[in-house]
Image (cartoon, rainbow, N blue to C red; front, side, top):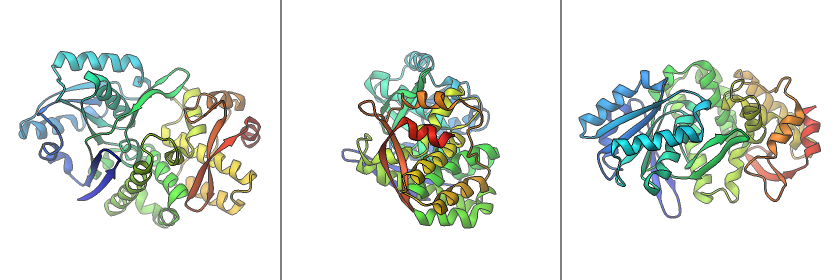
Length: 356
């Protein structure tokens, strides 16, 4: 088992990475929760595969657990879903020392985390991510929230879990598109923080796409280490943590404009990373060979780098609602070279220029 610790100023928690940890999840949870009463929030896809196993493991170790199943997909990520789940938690009898367990991908984790943050002003929260993207990114760092029609994650908070449990065996049930969505975020870490990770991805992509267990454990651990290091320095995203949003400015806009139906998150981020790289090239922060390296790595594993026929002015209008913006200025994370990135003020014309 691999363990990565997220060390925050006032609180820390572990990320457990192992093959088969779900079968003993109750035993591990005993060390992190105040009581044995919990509710599992999952979705209609994951519930058919893992819910019974997790409930059995919890029951075996004396937990009293129930479950709530939401419709799978980004469409569920709204305030109506949160209100319904909060009412169900109350009906089940969750108390201040009870817990919410997120069993699923990023959407489930974001929703369940917000429910845990709001219920009785905050109860214990556990993340059990079941997609590669959630394992390497969204389950770590405490961002929770839901969407409004105007944009992604507009309603949310920072609410850290008590622990994160990553079972690498669940990756075998993912389709290729979901795997690539996670690889997109791993590529992001290499671009913003670790050139050696980029080298590893380029050298081993075939084995990675075949979900070689040793490869996946390394990639998940390294991604969690990078994110943990950044979050530990800036938990509430007042400064350096914003670099984790590389590719997300255009990416979130594409998701919102297409109503989360055309792209999954990692695909939209891949497109966003490429176009952010084009802005960096125009500003002479990087050279053409580096932008080509980014593009080739994305394309080599089957990720998109083109936003298609979406109106570029609509993309810019959506970007204006991005949470990173300050004082009316558009903020963009741009690569500066291998393993380095920073946040910059960007003009609308610069975005429109690269979108041409």
